[in-house]
Image (tube, rainbow, N blue to C red; front, top):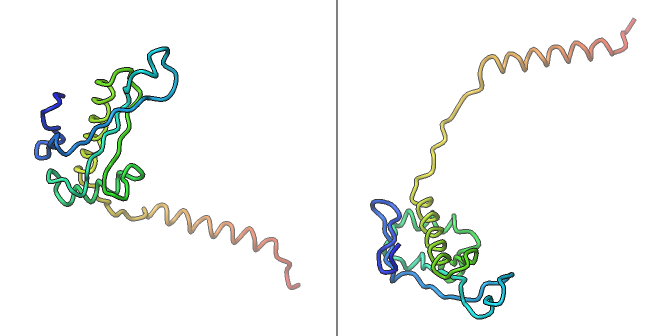
Length: 143
């Protein structure tokens, strides 16, 4: 992924790099002597509500899918800090954003209504008869 090239999500959807905000911060955790000198972690912000690249249907699905990554201001924030280099974390954050948008672009699978098989119904009724007969033998007779 070149920094200036648009992010290709699907054949019809691509994100303009101007819509992305990246900030680099220090990653937490172990890392040796160099850890406190470099800002290798990436915070990628994408304005879902203000994006001109997304169709309305995809935008609505993306807001539902984003969960806690979507702030009240309408920005999705993705933090990548696993890699040791800024370049790798940047690529990881962008790939995660593309994957999230691609999932939102895919229409949900339609549920195909099914019926209970006749054999299951007969098995259930047969079991009910058997249990009823067993309980009938436990009852005290009137004689």
